[in-house]
Amino acid sequence: MNLQLDGQHVLITGGSKGIGLSCAKAFLDEGARVTLVSRSAEALDAAAKTLGAQTRVETIAADLSKDSERVRTMAEAGPIDILVNNAGAIPGGGLLDLTMERWREAWDLKVFGYIHMTQMALAKMKEQRKGVIVNIIGTAGRFPRYDYICGGAGNASLVAFTSAVGGKASEWGVRVFGINPALTKTDRVMTLSRARAKTALGDENRWEEMLSGLPFDRLIEPDEVARTAACLASPACGYVSGTVLDIDGGGGFR
Image 1 (tube, rainbow, N blue to C red):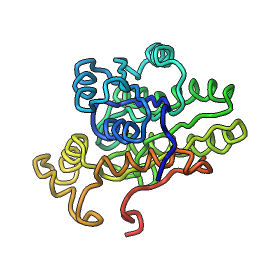
Image 2 (image 1 turned 180 degrees about the horizontal axis):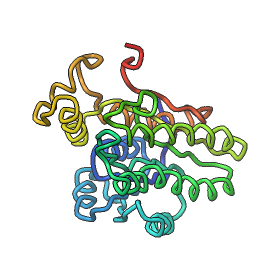
Image 3 (image 1 turned 90 degrees about the vertical axis):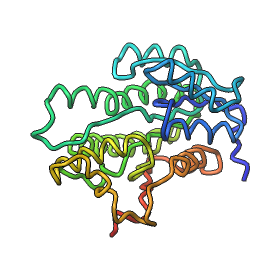
């Protein structure tokens, strides 16, 4: 299938590793050009080298937990056709385990970061009468757990936000949708699994026990999420807006 993404400019936050880096590869494979955003210039350089296609890869080092850095990022990126919001690392733990400072720090990057980046991109896309915004969120927003309460509450907010904005944006020729991956094979899975093991079992070294009983007996591959994002963001799926798709192997119904 030709996804008709040739020459499209895709801005990907959290693009130096994990799902973000896989998204970059998926869009590049379809002929798009990408701009990767991450805090670390060093990590971005390494990511760009792994992607090859240097003429179609640009990078911006920025701390997207800060308003001013988000504004700078959008200015440096220039006109974009597709925004993939993916930056964020909300910590595990229960309500009594996290300070309010830690809550704000986490939400400044993922929750308010997504909202602000969407706001700026949508304003420009509305003028152009075209554009796509993809929010990579997470199934904790559908199925919140006490031991990931900060992430569950943040993700639930973004699910509601994405659906509300996506419902309106279609009037302006813009599509906004979300993807909720369940546990995906990234470095972050180990971090969250360690936190859950500490809460549930009192021993973070028993983190592998938190990953048993998965659908298809495995974690999701980042490329599976990325290819879904590329396909849904393409004209081939041009009627998708307001939807937040759960990628969980049916785990939510088990």
